[in-house]
Length: 397
Image 1: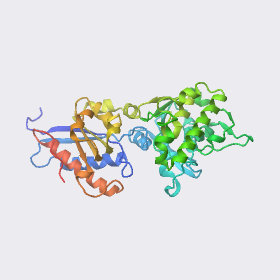
Image 2: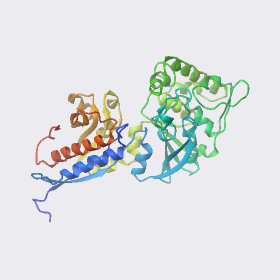
Image 3: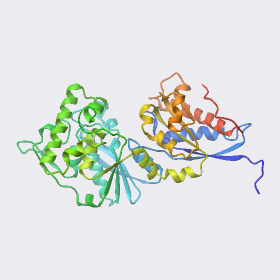
Image 4: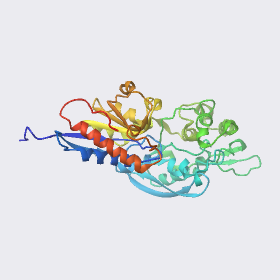
């Protein structure tokens, strides 16, 4: 029979997203866990502490890593990078579901020397990785569309899959934003395996393909597009849609206006053309990684990402985690927060800790400093969880 004086075990599920530009989700979880464990059993505490780590993603970069951390197997492949250079990429596969991501195939971080190529970057590498995934005969492929470097409407991806785009002279065109407006004819052919595979787009981007809320206008500037580039890309994508419709693609124009068609520089549109269904990236990955079962035995959930802001409230991963915590204590950790404390209940959060509260330095590009601060925050959270009674303790500088 357990001793009535034995310490209560507090079970914490650490389920963060990445801190973009600084630490992966796995590194964030490791640092927080190290701090929590160091605080367990501190003098005066009455609780033992158990940590379960669940690094997460919401369809952006880090999606493959999150799946691997949850038990998927990493499979390596070589693809065409955003400007054509060979890139060593990877997908995740568990025997049934494959996860393929834009970020590690043709993402912004893969541009040579970091030079932005708003017109010439291509999504072809994503198509190469999709072909590799199909060779494993999965029942389902999750298409994680965050972090793209291109605005080509998925023309590059479709080229890799077997589509052919030709100019007025019959010459084949490479997939890029620059060549969209030169398409004269389209011939369509895709691997037969695609017909029997479920395609799921995991993204929380809800923008259409074209117009003031479309891919070029909203996301083009992040990829180096100036006003003239944005106008040219929007015109090019509109022409692309018209050519797809002329080639006999059912609902080509209607799909361009669908929510999510503008994700990843229009890759969302190309995925819709292939018959993919769009789902909330945050909730889909929580389901894929069995979050609800994992949280059942936990007392507290710790989540987070690089920045908490109005976009977080709109349904990004920390908000989804807290919402699905089932009334358990929910704590968020972030590099910075633009949300005042009175907004925390809007996300079902009990407490927010930020790295900015612990340093006057910019930690966003300093992985070592970020990890150190996360360990300190973990210690403070652990100390708060170990107290016999009372609210969570305030953050300390």
